[in-house]
Length: 379
Ligand code: MG
Image 1: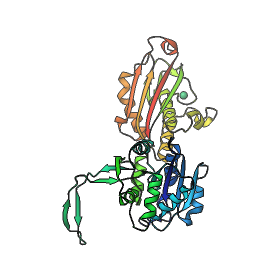
Image 2: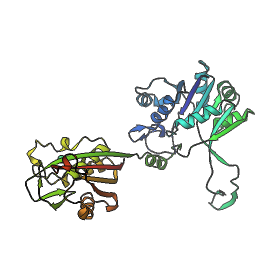
Image 3: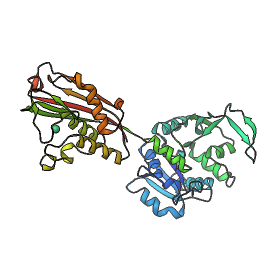
Image 4: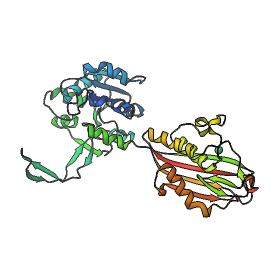
Protein backbone atom coordinates (compact mmCIF):
# COMPACT_ATOMS: atom_id res chain seq x y z
CA UNK A 1 0.00 0.00 0.00
CA UNK A 2 1.41 3.42 -0.93
CA UNK A 3 1.79 5.87 1.93
CA UNK A 4 -0.63 8.73 1.45
CA UNK A 5 -0.68 12.07 3.25
CA UNK A 6 -3.42 14.66 3.21
CA UNK A 7 -2.46 18.33 3.11
CA UNK A 8 -5.28 20.59 4.21
CA UNK A 9 -4.98 24.25 3.23
CA UNK A 10 -6.39 26.44 5.99
CA UNK A 11 -4.13 29.49 6.07
CA UNK A 12 -6.52 31.94 4.35
CA UNK A 13 -7.89 35.00 6.08
CA UNK A 14 -11.29 34.67 4.35
CA UNK A 15 -11.74 38.35 3.50
CA UNK A 16 -14.81 37.51 1.40
CA UNK A 17 -16.47 35.86 4.39
CA UNK A 18 -16.94 38.74 6.82
CA UNK A 19 -17.25 38.11 10.55
CA UNK A 20 -14.34 37.87 12.97
CA UNK A 21 -13.23 34.33 12.21
CA UNK A 22 -11.49 33.02 9.13
CA UNK A 23 -14.13 30.89 7.37
CA UNK A 24 -12.42 27.56 8.07
CA UNK A 25 -12.98 28.10 11.80
CA UNK A 26 -16.66 29.07 11.49
CA UNK A 27 -18.93 26.76 13.48
CA UNK A 28 -21.26 24.51 11.54
CA UNK A 29 -23.86 22.93 13.83
CA UNK A 30 -21.51 23.36 16.79
CA UNK A 31 -18.35 22.03 15.11
CA UNK A 32 -15.77 24.12 13.29
CA UNK A 33 -15.60 23.63 9.51
CA UNK A 34 -11.94 22.67 9.66
CA UNK A 35 -12.55 20.02 12.31
CA UNK A 36 -15.24 18.43 10.14
CA UNK A 37 -12.84 18.48 7.18
CA UNK A 38 -10.07 16.85 9.21
CA UNK A 39 -12.43 14.20 10.56
CA UNK A 40 -13.23 13.05 7.03
CA UNK A 41 -9.57 12.47 6.19
CA UNK A 42 -8.68 10.92 9.55
CA UNK A 43 -11.54 8.42 9.14
CA UNK A 44 -10.40 7.29 5.68
CA UNK A 45 -8.31 4.10 5.86
CA UNK A 46 -6.23 5.16 2.83
CA UNK A 47 -4.87 8.30 4.53
CA UNK A 48 -1.83 7.83 6.75
CA UNK A 49 -1.21 11.33 8.06
CA UNK A 50 -2.72 14.79 7.90
CA UNK A 51 -0.82 18.06 7.74
CA UNK A 52 -2.64 21.39 7.94
CA UNK A 53 -1.22 24.64 6.60
CA UNK A 54 -2.45 27.33 9.00
CA UNK A 55 -1.96 31.06 9.41
CA UNK A 56 0.59 31.84 12.16
CA UNK A 57 -2.03 33.99 13.92
CA UNK A 58 -4.39 31.00 14.17
CA UNK A 59 -2.17 28.78 16.34
CA UNK A 60 -4.45 29.03 19.38
CA UNK A 61 -7.74 28.49 17.58
CA UNK A 62 -6.19 25.65 15.58
CA UNK A 63 -5.06 23.92 18.77
CA UNK A 64 -8.60 24.21 20.11
CA UNK A 65 -10.03 22.97 16.79
CA UNK A 66 -8.02 19.74 16.76
CA UNK A 67 -8.44 18.98 20.45
CA UNK A 68 -8.46 15.22 20.96
CA UNK A 69 -7.52 14.44 17.34
CA UNK A 70 -4.53 12.21 16.66
CA UNK A 71 -2.18 12.24 13.66
CA UNK A 72 -2.73 15.91 12.78
CA UNK A 73 0.15 18.36 12.61
CA UNK A 74 0.28 22.00 11.60
CA UNK A 75 2.70 23.96 9.46
CA UNK A 76 2.66 27.71 8.95
CA UNK A 77 1.31 28.69 5.55
CA UNK A 78 2.33 31.63 3.38
CA UNK A 79 0.77 34.73 1.84
CA UNK A 80 -0.95 32.91 -1.03
CA UNK A 81 -2.64 29.54 -1.37
CA UNK A 82 0.11 28.33 -3.65
CA UNK A 83 2.77 29.32 -1.15
CA UNK A 84 0.90 27.64 1.70
CA UNK A 85 0.69 24.40 -0.27
CA UNK A 86 4.38 24.51 -1.08
CA UNK A 87 5.27 25.05 2.58
CA UNK A 88 2.99 22.13 3.49
CA UNK A 89 4.65 19.90 0.90
CA UNK A 90 8.11 20.90 2.16
CA UNK A 91 7.05 19.87 5.67
CA UNK A 92 5.83 16.52 4.30
CA UNK A 93 9.08 16.02 2.36
CA UNK A 94 10.76 14.96 5.60
CA UNK A 95 8.65 11.79 5.66
CA UNK A 96 8.38 11.63 1.84
CA UNK A 97 4.98 9.93 1.32
CA UNK A 98 4.16 8.26 -2.02
CA UNK A 99 0.96 10.19 -2.57
CA UNK A 100 -0.61 13.39 -1.36
CA UNK A 101 -4.18 14.65 -1.44
CA UNK A 102 -4.43 18.44 -1.26
CA UNK A 103 -7.74 19.78 0.03
CA UNK A 104 -9.36 23.09 0.96
CA UNK A 105 -9.98 23.36 4.70
CA UNK A 106 -13.29 25.08 3.99
CA UNK A 107 -14.77 22.05 2.17
CA UNK A 108 -16.08 20.12 5.18
CA UNK A 109 -18.54 17.92 3.24
CA UNK A 110 -15.81 15.90 1.52
CA UNK A 111 -17.07 12.31 1.53
CA UNK A 112 -15.12 9.11 2.11
CA UNK A 113 -16.33 7.99 -1.34
CA UNK A 114 -14.82 11.06 -3.00
CA UNK A 115 -11.48 10.54 -1.24
CA UNK A 116 -11.57 6.92 -2.44
CA UNK A 117 -12.28 7.99 -6.05
CA UNK A 118 -9.27 10.32 -6.02
CA UNK A 119 -7.02 7.62 -4.48
CA UNK A 120 -8.24 5.06 -7.06
CA UNK A 121 -7.50 7.53 -9.85
CA UNK A 122 -3.91 7.81 -8.63
CA UNK A 123 -3.32 4.11 -9.41
CA UNK A 124 -2.91 5.14 -13.04
CA UNK A 125 -2.84 8.95 -13.27
CA UNK A 126 -0.14 11.41 -12.21
CA UNK A 127 -2.70 13.93 -11.06
CA UNK A 128 -6.39 13.49 -10.20
CA UNK A 129 -8.94 16.28 -10.15
CA UNK A 130 -12.55 15.86 -8.96
CA UNK A 131 -14.94 17.87 -11.13
CA UNK A 132 -18.63 18.67 -11.31
CA UNK A 133 -20.55 19.75 -14.40
CA UNK A 134 -21.38 23.35 -15.25
CA UNK A 135 -25.17 23.49 -15.35
CA UNK A 136 -25.94 27.20 -15.75
CA UNK A 137 -25.35 29.06 -18.98
CA UNK A 138 -22.15 31.09 -18.77
CA UNK A 139 -21.91 34.76 -19.78
CA UNK A 140 -19.01 37.10 -20.01
CA UNK A 141 -19.98 40.61 -18.87
CA UNK A 142 -18.29 43.99 -19.11
CA UNK A 143 -17.59 46.41 -16.27
CA UNK A 144 -21.12 47.87 -16.43
CA UNK A 145 -22.80 44.48 -16.09
CA UNK A 146 -23.77 44.29 -19.77
CA UNK A 147 -23.50 40.88 -21.37
CA UNK A 148 -20.63 40.68 -23.81
CA UNK A 149 -20.97 37.10 -24.95
CA UNK A 150 -22.35 33.69 -24.08
CA UNK A 151 -19.53 31.29 -23.30
CA UNK A 152 -20.02 27.78 -24.72
CA UNK A 153 -20.34 25.31 -21.86
CA UNK A 154 -19.07 22.29 -23.80
CA UNK A 155 -16.23 20.51 -22.00
CA UNK A 156 -16.30 23.00 -19.13
CA UNK A 157 -16.30 21.63 -15.59
CA UNK A 158 -15.82 23.06 -12.12
CA UNK A 159 -12.72 21.94 -10.20
CA UNK A 160 -12.99 20.74 -6.63
CA UNK A 161 -10.63 19.29 -4.06
CA UNK A 162 -9.18 16.93 -2.84
CA UNK A 163 -6.77 16.86 -5.75
CA UNK A 164 -4.44 13.87 -5.72
CA UNK A 165 -0.82 13.65 -6.81
CA UNK A 166 2.35 11.58 -6.72
CA UNK A 167 4.17 13.36 -3.94
CA UNK A 168 7.63 13.84 -5.56
CA UNK A 169 6.07 15.20 -8.76
CA UNK A 170 3.79 17.78 -7.17
CA UNK A 171 6.56 18.89 -4.80
CA UNK A 172 8.95 19.37 -7.75
CA UNK A 173 6.27 21.26 -9.72
CA UNK A 174 5.52 23.58 -6.77
CA UNK A 175 9.23 24.30 -6.34
CA UNK A 176 9.65 24.98 -10.05
CA UNK A 177 6.65 27.29 -10.47
CA UNK A 178 6.73 29.14 -7.18
CA UNK A 179 5.10 32.58 -7.17
CA UNK A 180 3.04 32.10 -10.35
CA UNK A 181 -0.32 32.70 -8.64
CA UNK A 182 -1.85 29.46 -9.92
CA UNK A 183 -5.22 28.92 -8.24
CA UNK A 184 -5.11 25.18 -7.70
CA UNK A 185 -2.58 22.37 -7.56
CA UNK A 186 -3.79 20.64 -10.70
CA UNK A 187 -2.79 23.88 -12.48
CA UNK A 188 0.69 23.61 -10.95
CA UNK A 189 1.06 20.07 -12.28
CA UNK A 190 -0.32 21.12 -15.68
CA UNK A 191 2.23 23.93 -15.71
CA UNK A 192 4.91 21.27 -15.28
CA UNK A 193 3.61 19.62 -18.44
CA UNK A 194 2.06 16.61 -16.76
CA UNK A 195 -1.42 15.32 -17.31
CA UNK A 196 -4.26 15.51 -14.83
CA UNK A 197 -7.20 13.08 -15.01
CA UNK A 198 -10.66 13.95 -13.77
CA UNK A 199 -12.94 11.89 -11.56
CA UNK A 200 -16.53 12.65 -10.57
CA UNK A 201 -16.67 15.30 -7.87
CA UNK A 202 -19.60 15.80 -5.53
CA UNK A 203 -22.11 18.68 -5.56
CA UNK A 204 -22.35 18.44 -1.76
CA UNK A 205 -18.61 19.13 -1.47
CA UNK A 206 -19.04 22.90 -1.56
CA UNK A 207 -16.35 25.36 -0.61
CA UNK A 208 -17.52 27.79 2.05
CA UNK A 209 -16.61 31.28 0.91
CA UNK A 210 -19.56 33.42 2.02
CA UNK A 211 -22.10 33.43 4.83
CA UNK A 212 -24.66 32.22 2.24
CA UNK A 213 -22.49 29.16 1.57
CA UNK A 214 -22.49 28.44 5.29
CA UNK A 215 -26.29 28.73 5.39
CA UNK A 216 -26.57 26.39 2.39
CA UNK A 217 -24.28 23.89 4.04
CA UNK A 218 -26.22 24.06 7.31
CA UNK A 219 -29.43 23.30 5.40
CA UNK A 220 -27.87 20.20 3.82
CA UNK A 221 -26.93 18.86 7.23
CA UNK A 222 -30.55 18.36 8.26
CA UNK A 223 -31.01 14.83 9.56
CA UNK A 224 -34.15 12.78 9.45
CA UNK A 225 -34.68 10.76 12.59
CA UNK A 226 -37.24 8.29 13.82
CA UNK A 227 -38.39 7.63 17.38
CA UNK A 228 -40.84 5.07 18.67
CA UNK A 229 -43.02 4.91 21.72
CA UNK A 230 -45.18 2.28 23.39
CA UNK A 231 -47.62 2.50 26.27
CA UNK A 232 -50.16 0.35 28.11
CA UNK A 233 -52.86 1.15 30.63
CA UNK A 234 -55.41 -1.16 32.19
CA UNK A 235 -59.17 -0.79 32.09
CA UNK A 236 -60.92 0.18 35.31
CA UNK A 237 -64.27 1.50 36.42
CA UNK A 238 -65.80 4.26 34.34
CA UNK A 239 -67.77 4.99 31.19
CA UNK A 240 -65.23 6.67 28.90
CA UNK A 241 -61.56 6.70 27.98
CA UNK A 242 -59.22 9.34 26.59
CA UNK A 243 -57.52 8.45 23.31
CA UNK A 244 -55.53 10.88 21.19
CA UNK A 245 -56.90 13.69 23.31
CA UNK A 246 -60.59 12.94 22.77
CA UNK A 247 -63.13 11.30 25.03
CA UNK A 248 -64.48 8.00 23.72
CA UNK A 249 -67.50 6.37 25.39
CA UNK A 250 -66.77 2.85 26.63
CA UNK A 251 -67.95 0.22 29.09
CA UNK A 252 -64.84 0.95 31.20
CA UNK A 253 -62.53 3.80 32.10
CA UNK A 254 -58.72 3.69 32.17
CA UNK A 255 -56.47 3.40 35.23
CA UNK A 256 -53.58 5.82 35.36
CA UNK A 257 -51.94 8.69 37.20
CA UNK A 258 -52.81 11.17 34.47
CA UNK A 259 -55.82 10.85 32.16
CA UNK A 260 -54.21 7.55 30.95
CA UNK A 261 -54.30 8.46 27.26
CA UNK A 262 -52.10 5.61 25.98
CA UNK A 263 -51.89 7.03 22.44
CA UNK A 264 -50.63 10.43 23.55
CA UNK A 265 -48.21 8.79 25.98
CA UNK A 266 -46.80 6.61 23.18
CA UNK A 267 -46.69 9.69 20.93
CA UNK A 268 -44.82 11.69 23.58
CA UNK A 269 -42.23 8.92 23.96
CA UNK A 270 -41.87 8.60 20.18
CA UNK A 271 -41.14 12.32 19.89
CA UNK A 272 -38.74 12.37 22.83
CA UNK A 273 -37.03 9.26 21.49
CA UNK A 274 -36.46 10.79 18.06
CA UNK A 275 -34.13 13.40 19.49
CA UNK A 276 -32.81 11.46 22.47
CA UNK A 277 -34.60 13.50 25.12
CA UNK A 278 -35.40 10.70 27.54
CA UNK A 279 -38.92 9.45 28.18
CA UNK A 280 -42.25 10.67 29.47
CA UNK A 281 -41.58 9.36 32.98
CA UNK A 282 -38.48 11.54 33.26
CA UNK A 283 -40.28 14.70 32.18
CA UNK A 284 -43.52 13.98 34.07
CA UNK A 285 -42.74 11.66 37.01
CA UNK A 286 -45.83 9.68 38.11
CA UNK A 287 -44.63 10.36 41.68
CA UNK A 288 -45.29 14.07 41.16
CA UNK A 289 -48.82 14.94 42.31
CA UNK A 290 -48.77 17.85 39.86
CA UNK A 291 -49.57 15.39 37.04
CA UNK A 292 -52.45 13.61 38.82
CA UNK A 293 -55.36 13.51 36.39
CA UNK A 294 -53.39 15.71 33.99
CA UNK A 295 -54.61 16.03 30.47
CA UNK A 296 -52.04 14.22 28.34
CA UNK A 297 -52.08 16.77 25.52
CA UNK A 298 -49.70 18.74 27.78
CA UNK A 299 -47.16 15.89 27.68
CA UNK A 300 -47.24 15.64 23.91
CA UNK A 301 -47.09 19.39 23.52
CA UNK A 302 -44.13 19.60 25.91
CA UNK A 303 -42.15 17.02 23.90
CA UNK A 304 -42.97 18.90 20.70
CA UNK A 305 -41.93 22.24 22.21
CA UNK A 306 -38.57 20.70 23.21
CA UNK A 307 -38.14 19.56 19.61
CA UNK A 308 -38.92 23.05 18.31
CA UNK A 309 -36.47 24.56 20.80
CA UNK A 310 -33.76 22.39 19.27
CA UNK A 311 -34.59 23.70 15.82
CA UNK A 312 -36.35 20.48 14.81
CA UNK A 313 -39.63 19.89 13.04
CA UNK A 314 -42.15 17.09 12.89
CA UNK A 315 -42.41 15.23 9.61
CA UNK A 316 -44.97 12.63 10.66
CA UNK A 317 -46.48 11.04 13.75
CA UNK A 318 -48.07 7.64 13.26
CA UNK A 319 -50.16 5.92 15.94
CA UNK A 320 -51.32 2.31 16.22
CA UNK A 321 -53.92 1.66 18.90
CA UNK A 322 -54.16 -1.98 19.97
CA UNK A 323 -57.50 -3.11 21.43
CA UNK A 324 -60.64 -5.19 20.81
CA UNK A 325 -62.99 -2.51 22.08
CA UNK A 326 -63.85 0.34 21.76
CA UNK A 327 -63.96 0.48 17.97
CA UNK A 328 -61.47 3.10 16.83
CA UNK A 329 -62.65 3.51 13.23
CA UNK A 330 -65.57 5.85 13.94
CA UNK A 331 -63.26 8.16 15.93
CA UNK A 332 -60.24 8.08 13.68
CA UNK A 333 -60.91 11.42 11.94
CA UNK A 334 -61.54 13.21 15.24
CA UNK A 335 -58.36 11.69 16.71
CA UNK A 336 -56.22 12.88 13.80
CA UNK A 337 -57.79 16.30 14.08
CA UNK A 338 -57.18 16.37 17.86
CA UNK A 339 -53.47 15.49 17.63
CA UNK A 340 -52.95 17.95 14.75
CA UNK A 341 -54.59 20.66 16.87
CA UNK A 342 -52.48 19.89 19.97
CA UNK A 343 -49.29 20.21 17.88
CA UNK A 344 -50.47 22.93 15.53
CA UNK A 345 -49.49 20.89 12.46
CA UNK A 346 -51.39 19.85 9.31
CA UNK A 347 -53.58 16.77 9.68
CA UNK A 348 -51.61 15.14 6.85
CA UNK A 349 -48.70 14.81 9.29
CA UNK A 350 -50.74 12.67 11.68
CA UNK A 351 -51.91 9.10 11.21
CA UNK A 352 -54.12 7.05 13.53
CA UNK A 353 -54.84 3.40 12.91
CA UNK A 354 -55.94 0.48 15.02
CA UNK A 355 -55.65 -3.26 15.25
CA UNK A 356 -57.00 -6.00 17.45
CA UNK A 357 -54.87 -8.89 18.66
CA UNK A 358 -57.43 -11.48 17.55
CA UNK A 359 -58.55 -12.07 21.12
CA UNK A 360 -55.02 -12.95 22.25
CA UNK A 361 -53.08 -11.53 25.19
CA UNK A 362 -54.10 -8.83 27.63
CA UNK A 363 -55.60 -6.64 24.93
CA UNK A 364 -57.48 -9.65 23.59
CA UNK A 365 -58.88 -10.38 27.05
CA UNK A 366 -59.83 -6.71 27.21
CA UNK A 367 -57.86 -6.09 30.38
CA UNK A 368 -56.34 -2.99 28.95
CA UNK A 369 -55.28 -1.03 25.94
CA UNK A 370 -51.92 -0.51 24.24
CA UNK A 371 -50.65 2.03 21.77
CA UNK A 372 -47.56 2.41 19.64
CA UNK A 373 -46.34 5.55 17.94
CA UNK A 374 -43.59 6.30 15.45
CA UNK A 375 -42.38 9.88 15.09
CA UNK A 376 -40.35 11.03 12.10
CA UNK A 377 -38.57 14.34 12.66
CA UNK A 378 -36.05 16.62 10.97
CA UNK A 379 -33.24 17.92 13.10
MG1 MG B 1 -48.81 5.96 30.15
